[in-house]
Every structure is written in structure tokens, then in C-alpha cells.
Length: 184
Image: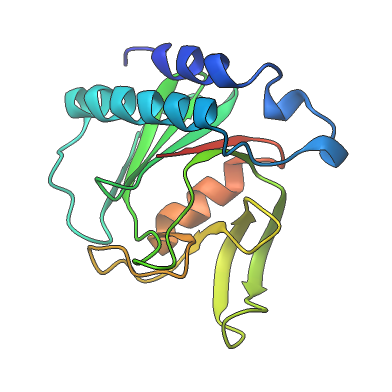
């Protein structure tokens, strides 16, 4: 499968030091205009790249995962709010594409570049009636996270990025605190 260099180039425009290289005390989201522009470029490139590898008509809750994915290398997750898809790259190679459900109007998922700040196999929301958040990967200090949840085919969350449960489990198993998530 073809390597994907555009994502790294787009992110480099807005990020001087990769999140994974930063110490855990300095990790934080970048929602600056430059980061949002870089995230938009990365999403466009991921969408174009995925067209070559994956059926673009995934149904809500559907996903694709590469059978022979590389086992080493940096992980990057690219989330398209417009398309309601997430793209996962390892060492620059597309290894997964999933449908998502992002924040509904008024509870929008923020665009930008986010490091994974915390991981918890089973988390319960402190904000929303103790709602379960399996395979939670926190992206900011205000409650935005990647996690398994219902995928109705439209934005429906309170700002999080919901993933199909099996996809969320695979992603959770391979990411580390500090890995980058790009949202636009």
C-alpha cells in the first residue's frame, strides 16, 4: 500500500514539535487557526488517499481495517467532521477507515490537532449521566474524547468522536498517550 506523506507535511505546518515527543506535562490541544488549516489539509489528503484503498460507501457503524497492517511506526488518526469518517495511519500507511458520529449542533466537536492525553478501557462520563465510554481516549481537559458508541450516520454526540466498538478496540490497542489526532 502507498505511503502517506501529505499528512505529516500538513501537520508540520502547524506543529513545531510532534506531540509524541513532548513530555506528558506539556501535552495539549492546538485549536489555533494554523492548526485548523493544517487539519483541514490533512483531512482532504486522507479522504483522497482512502478512495484508492477503501469502499467509500461504508454504512453507519461500518469500518475497514488492513489485513497486513504494519506493526511498527507512529500512529496518526485523522477525523473528517464533514464526511463522518476517521482514518488511521501507521508509519504513514493507511491501516483503517471508520464511520464516526461527532458532536451534534450546539455540542460541536472542535477542530484542531490533539494529543491523546489519557486512555481508559472503560470510562463513565462525569458530565452526562455516567454514560459509558468504552475505549476512551481523552483529547482535551473538557471532555472531548474518542470512544466506542452508537453511530447513527450523522453527528449525534455531545462533542466526542464516537467509533464502532470493534474499531475503537483495535485503535485503543495500538495508540499511546501523546499520539496525534487531527480533526477538521
